[in-house]
Structures are given as C-alpha cells and as structure tokens.
Image (cartoon, each protein chain N blue to C red):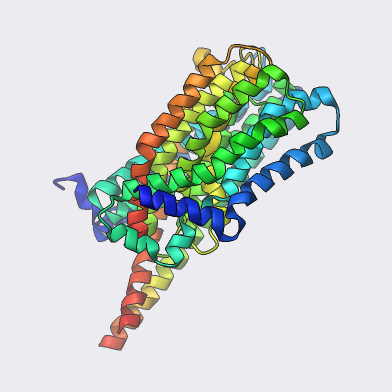
Length: 243
Length: 53
Length: 218
C-alpha cells in the first residue's frame, strides 16, 4: 500500500478493483437514482424556462463527464508514454466509449432543451460547436484504437493522438468563440442557469453530478478490467502459437 | 404522483428517456462484454493448465 | 535534406498524376458548388471564401496518404530511418514537399476559381494571403495524420477522420480572413491567429509526427 504505482500491476489492479467496484457501482446507482428522481419529481418549475429546467439534472452532469473523461484520457496517455504502465493505456481506451456516450447525451438533451427554449434544435453556438468537435475527436481516437492490431503500437499512437488532439481541441474552442462572434451578434443564447442557480436546483444537481461521476468511474474501471483480460488473452494465444 | 410538466412535457420526458436509455445501454454493453471476456479468459487458462498438467 | 526534398517533389510530379489530382479535385469542387446551391450571383459571392477554403482543404486531404504510404510500402522509409538524418527532419521535408506539390498550386489556382464564384475584387488579396499562410499548416497536420495511419491497410478513411477535426482551427481562421477581406472589413486579427497556428504547428508537430513514425517503424 506504499504507492499508487502498485496498481500499475495488472493483477493487483484487477484484485483491488474487484473489491472496490461493487461499492462504487452501488453508490453510483444510489446517487443517480436519488438525483434524477429528486430533480424530476421534487423541483419546482423555473419562472422563465418552465419545466424544461429539469433537463439540467442530466445535461450538466453529462457535459461535465464528457470533458472529464477526455481529461482522464490525456492524463492516462501521458502516464503511459512516460512510465509505460499497460493499465494506464488500457484505462484510457476504456474511458473513450464512456466519454462518447456522455457527449451524445449532452448534445441530445441540449438539442431537446433548445427546441422549445431557443426555437431551434441546433445553433452554431460556441459551446455546442465545441462539443461537436469533441465528439469528432472521440470518434477518431476510438477508430485509431480499433484499426491497429499490435497493442503497444496502438497504445503509443493513440496516446500521442490524444495529447496532440487536446491541444487542437483547445485551439478549436478559442477559434470557435472567435468565429461565432465574428458572424453573429454576441451570443444571447448561452444564458446558463448554473451561474445563478437557486438552492432548490443546486442540491439535486450536485447529487446527480456525483451519480454521473461514480457511474462513469465504475464503467471505466470495469472497462479497464475487460481490456486487461482481453490483452492477456491475446498475449497467451500469441505465446501458444509460438509453441 | 406525476409532476405537472406543462407544455414542455414532451421535451422533458423525451430527454430523460433518451438519456436513461443511453446510460442503461452503455452499462449493459460494458457488463456483457466484461462477462464474456472474463469467461473466455478463464476457460482458456484452465485449458492451458490442463494441457500442461 | 535538400536531396530528399528534391526527390520527393520530383516523384510527386512524375509518378502517376499525384500532382495534378489535387488541383483537378479543387476545380471540380468549385464547379459543383453552383450546381448545388443555384447560380444566384449574390449568394455565390457571399459563400465564395468559404467554398474556396473548403475546396482547398479537401484537395489537400485527398493527397495526404501519398506523403508516406509509397515510401512505407517499398521500404525506403526504413532506409530513411536508419540514415543519419533525424526523423524530425524527414517528416518536415515530407510536409514541405507535400506543400510545394499540393498547397502552392492550390494557392495559385484559387484566384482563378474565385473569379468563377464572383469574389469581389478586394477579396483576392486576403484570399491568397490566407491560403499562403494556412496551407502549410494543412500539410504539416496532414503529415502527422499520415504518420499515424501509415501502418494501417486502406487507412484513407481513417486518415480523414483523424485529420479533419485537427483542421478546424486553421479552417476557421483562414476562411474568416478571406471572408472579412471580401466584405472589406479589417482582417488583421484572424490573420495573426492563422499565422500563429501555422508557425506553432510547423514548430511543434514534426516532433509528434517523428515520434509516431518511430513507433510505426518499430
């Protein structure tokens, strides 16, 4: 228990995570159910947005996790490049599908919210556009993992793509901000409720965010276990073929 | 029981429905794949051990 | 390094139309747009900068897999890797050769095609300027993508999927420069941003491309 790097040993990681995973999963379901039921049934309508304010209990946490999953992938990629721990590379791989789903949820709920509120499903607003670009980066990352057969090569290439992609994603964020101001009047559409959110919405939102976070962590840990096992399987088969 | 969602009922309900379906789908696929890979690996390892021993 | 550059440029011009292909593609895209959106002059005028930038970007994309694929297949990339030339130099030269054979002709062709799209006269300068400044970034980023997918069989589609999101900032600022130029507005801010992106990618990305190529050659 001396250092965090002990968990870079795949066996140790699987042993420990097997013990921790049920706890995280149970807490995730508890928080998620509490947060969403609280948000859906026991919050008042907003005076401006009506009942659509209830959507933020999904929208904000999923958007948050979409970005956090990518950040986690960047950190894991850097750890893989610097210290060559396989668990790290495989954790990055496992985080990508979770991030994609979170991005889709954020985009979908945003579109459904935007329809009655802004009168349109989609606007080329900087925030929306940035998320679309993030989505494309996720797709490219996953496609690269899938395309390369050798595990270590794939881990190296996707790590570098992840780091380079992050730099470009940040640049795109600023470019998109600039571009939209260049085309339209300053955005009037991004009146986000979280800056002046009232307590009645704040507490269920926090519970919901915790739920999403634990949910993602549980899935990423599970996915990492799966990837470790799949990799071990391929290694064993390769060794057998060698005789 | 059901809160009054007013004229935005469709939007609220559909966004909850879409999100829950996606979340459940993601969890189900992850768990299924985890189970399958674990089963395959266990089977393979026991076979290897038997072949050797 | 110079010898490598000359060899690549020569190969690109000689071997099987890789040189003219990008230009022809650019021409066809620009010709097809009026068929798609209708021949209204004022509409074409307003979308001309965007169409020209998008056409140039797609034409650039089309020839990316040629940067490294041929050298990878016949093994000359392995030879280059064992030569005293640093890998960073090799990929920089590859990118430069790609720009000379694809980017530069596009820049030269763009004003001619701009006439067909009714670009206003004051827009020509900014258009050419933005393309000259922006296309090197496209080549350098594209070389990075080509290095990533060089080991993948039939990686053309994957290459596009990886490279296009990376092109977003360049496209935004490049098209913005030429659009503002066409409308007679001040375009110095996006021009500075575009130049910054190009300089940054040229300075840093070859290291990433070289690292990727070393992994692929392992």
